[in-house]
Length: 474
Ligand code: TTP
Ligand code: MG
Image (tube, rainbow, N blue to C red):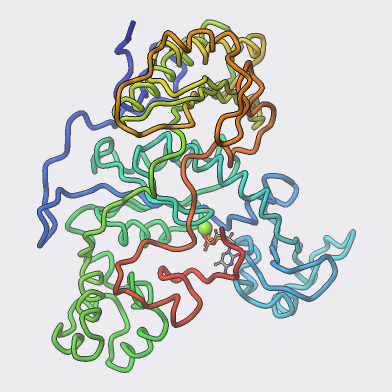
């Protein structure tokens, strides 16, 4: 039996206590058109975590909060080797920045010695990179993002684009962004900045504009004005070499580039000259496209306060199970594994999953397995619940007969599924599992970029969006 108590994003929950988002836009938006395209206007969100590696260390060790903290790649305690991966905003005040040699950082911000918290000379705390830990934190953030939109493009460990055209309108964009940031802060314990705009490039610039802990909404029609004072090397597709050449032509800001003569730009840079001018004018026809089929689909939802009551938890899991099954149906996905996520205060993430002998699409079964898995947590206070289907099968065709799988809810077979999940009762993905294995899609180190916008990586070792790579990204 299907219930219809949820909207298509599974956000409406009769159980109450929901972190409620009522800015869901019911139908499509008016089809405002970008110049030169017949594509409806998008609402794109870009989410980028603040001083991400440092924030992860501060989450793990709360005493580090508010301290000048430097995370060094290739750094070892007490040594001057390595390069700065990132620095907390407090450390940035002393001129410490990403990609700087640790030796130089130490000149600007000497290392704090044991017991030397006294403040005549400012000192900083230095830590080596612990990528595994940061990836597990990133996976928790991405989990929230995937639950927020069906179309998420992860572009690095700490940033992603979301297409939220169907669910957010411009009047509700600010509220949506602050709610998302609050959710990430309270549920993961790290801070995100968010930009919303009608194009990917404007959303990216917007997320950076008010960092840290900031959000900026750029409405359609405002993009060009928003870009006007932007240094030209922050325009999508413009790397340091092109920026230097543009500077020789007197073009220093995006506004200058937007006003430049397109023929002159083409003579100097070829077709790319026209393209970067279009980006500078806010014209960006790229759409947010996820990479490949998702590996899993999930829905999750937080209680405003931890809840121990069994019925309330079961109601929420039922709602989420229905929403996930509904989404899988819309994506044409069958699933072989059904899992739940249970977050106990403060941030203890438990995952449980059960695999079936073959892929199915059956909302009742998702619900019953999810409720079964929840039973282990009957007595425990819970602040957040999630339901996920994985081992997805997108091949078209008839749904496998359920008859053969029914026994699976009682434990299933003990065959291993292709990605290594065990089958059978609660054996799979148990305990404080790394969420990476539970994640939707992989990440990439750089922004999507059009084929001829080759600036950046080629010239400078920077990714095309200007993010330097020290070889330690995913
Ligand atoms: P960024 O998002 O560029 O930087 P950040 O999150 O530290 O700071 P901001 O608040 O400005 O967003 O990169 C994400 C992580 O990637 C960063 O925490 C560390 C790593 N990184 C490197 O290892 N080397 C680099 O040169 C840069 C720029 C980042
Ligand atoms: Mg960041």
